[in-house]
Image: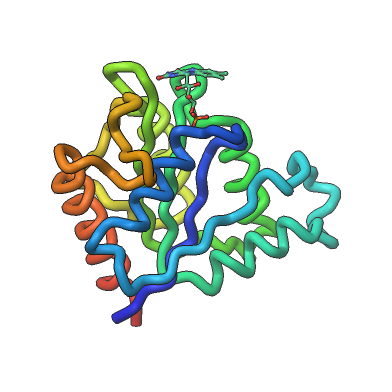
Length: 183
Ligand code: FNR
């Protein structure tokens, strides 16, 4: 069954490694036939509860995208051993006003890359805490801690052969989780 997946990248940097990784993930063989749409979280203002009665347009757009998706793929860097503020900001926007969260019940996958050996392990763990509260069933295994290197992707932006099998397996497990939760 073709699935609709919202992709949320936790970096706004033009040359973001995580955005490059996300672009490669959606091109993996197992992703073929599914529809991936990247959320524009860079357009979101800082969350302000005063605006709940009339949410800013980018927040409405995020909520429409996620609500119309079967699952959410989070691809995020680690900032100071946690998730970047821009990602938390997006989660907060999507969760409000109270009772109208776009995240509730949406299956999620969590992955990310950085140059460090521990990669984004701690950011992912913090993100998992929030996703649990937001009632998002999240892929537990396999975990994916991707250490970035210039050789990870080909010149065309695909995952190189040595990593493709593992990442394709990770994506397959994520898509199976999404399918299991799709009516
Ligand atoms: C970082 N970086 C980083 N890396 C890491 O592995 N653990 C960390 O805790 C941090 N902390 C951190 C804080 C801040 C404010 C910045 C700007 C960077 C390095 C980070 O992994 C690197 O900049 C990546 O390139 C960020 O991901 P994108 O933007 O390339 O996707």
